[in-house]
Length: 464
Image (cartoon, rainbow, N blue to C red; front, side, top):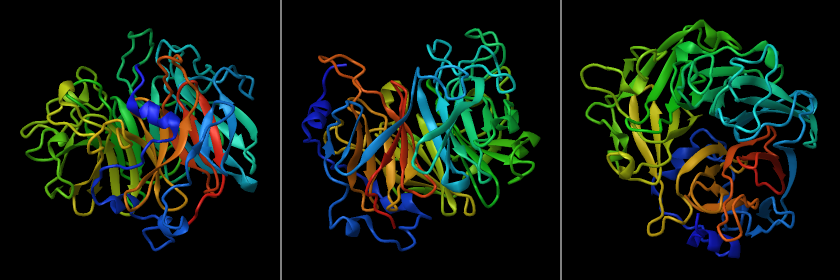
């Protein structure tokens, strides 16, 4: 990878935080304390978005604003505290859960394919397919972010990318693959969702939630009122992925209830075969339909290629982040490229689906107005920040950042990866993933994908 303008600007501290947004950015914060009237980011910072310029880390790991500091919780290759083997690589999606006496429990995905060098160690009772290299690890932290324990939470899965939390404090880890038994040495079919208990993984084991579909899963969000689970599909090739909902037979039934089964449906927007053609924020559709998936297990044909009858089905490229806010579910299309087969191009979309009205709305279109190296390219993992804004892991080219986003649409750099995995002549940095906050909102946890590193970031956070 050649050095880009963005890399040069990032390293000299001259990187602008300007960004072109179209749409109502405040939509993204529905249901947060800020939206409910909390102190604004701008007021807390005397009119200046962000926490100031990033300071180069003398240790070459993570650049942060002045006053912030990090603790490395875990690095790939180091021994797990449990003695089960080395810490796996390819750190991806993650969530934090409250524990007793101020402790925090982290569950961390490992997006390992069949060629992974550092697999999730196979552990009896927690392994789905002995040939699977992926899975999750669980960390237990004391109130000062010191690691008390680190262990395998599930193993024998594949390409565990993102997922999402449930209202009953478990993690749903998603396999971003649809390889079947006999492919890449696997002994079982892959492409499922698995439930992981962050406190005691043996209570959930390694059971695929087959009724939720077999496809290239990315992320999920649970409607806390109805128990409906929304799912995104990040299919790599055209036809691209679908947006799904799963109606469980035991909605909101607690740990293990999703194993009871349910009904999987895919979203159809009549007359819209590809969401990328919608370019105007505020555009909404009031006739959203949900079509039963003919074969959720995709025994012969991938779901996105199945026959959904008259009217077809609606696709979108790079369906990734998914979260619940207020009374609606939001999902992200990180980008669309006509060169890849999309009907149109964009640098990122955020969509909102209102289940009560059955209305789908394009909320925000991301993208720099003149230079694709500026912030705003390819939004990926997303989480709410203590000040009521958002933290976004940008999955683009060049230097890798965690960006903050205010309700006025202002972008500011929060962290920058300093671990060069390329060469001095052609630098490259691993993307960030799994950004999440501690239950008390005083610590930001985030992963560097490669080399696999989990950070705890503390400092003068502004709170609503």
